[in-house]
Length: 208
Image 1 (tube, rainbow, N blue to C red):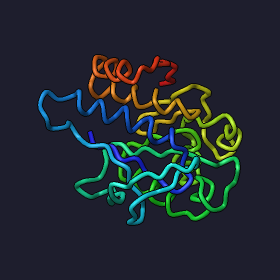
Image 2: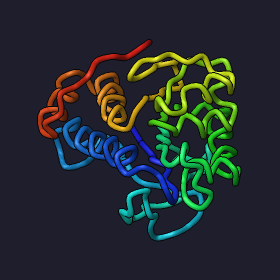
Image 3: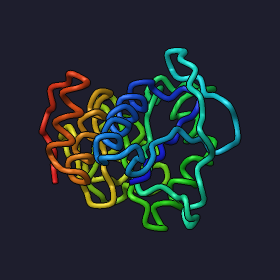
Image 4: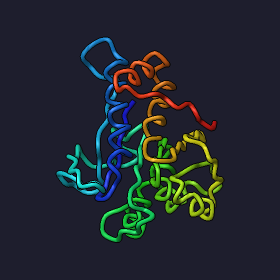
């Protein structure tokens, strides 16, 4: 399973780093040899060395998001949120929505059949892309009404599984989303092992 986490200036650290750590452990545990059963990486739309997250953490970038039809296109594309409600015009999910490049890329991947998962207000970037129109989804509590007004069918659960569209509510719910995907892809033993090693008590509120 190849996972790309699409980051941008102003993304919330835990939205991206929490799922990254879960997938990184899972890909190690899912194989008996030194080769991983896939990859997880941070990607951006433009070539750059690092991104500055919402609390100032500087995160290294592994590469750019491939074309949705490319051989190395992700099986799962994770979209973190960050700074949506503050309407930060320089570095935030809101800023990326206004620029339009991220929503355009998300729409293209969705049209090509890429499974997409949003964390927190990452759902609002999907809404801007039209991906959540008429679909079951959730976002951070501060943006629930905006998500509903955008045309999504809001489900107030920690994690919502709507087939090729997954979404998680508040910041830490991204960890639960990632563990849910890991359990589906690699089994409960791997998911439980990851939860144990990161000392995280899973919350199983998933609306399917």
